[in-house]
Image 1 (spheres, helix red, strand yellow):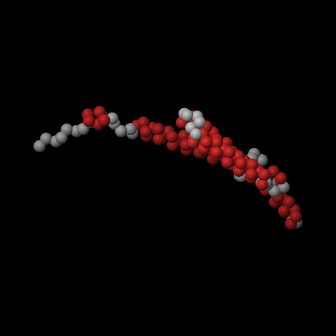
Image 2 (tube, one colour):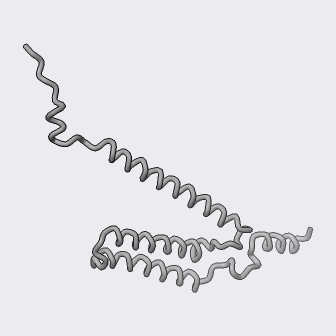
Length: 135
């Protein structure tokens, strides 16, 4: 195989011939601007106490975080369904599955520890004090 044929085969295999696979300044700047906006909005929501309810604010911030992760994956990591024959997306799905299992399991364990290991009330502690030994 000639050197030019090997280079063409290598470029085709790694997607170097695809203009969408290369990063552009415009793509990086778009990702940067979106990242700044997706960071500034939740910061403003918390600092100005716009929503008022802490649970709702937390859910909105988590939604912004998810959108920001997607922006980073697309703009900076260049992940899409066509890259590497779809293996990137399969690896991402596997990673997300493991993260969800870990988070749900951790929350479940912490909830049950909190429920089952709470200290006794003041009244309960006084009724369970052993009698002093007789002398």
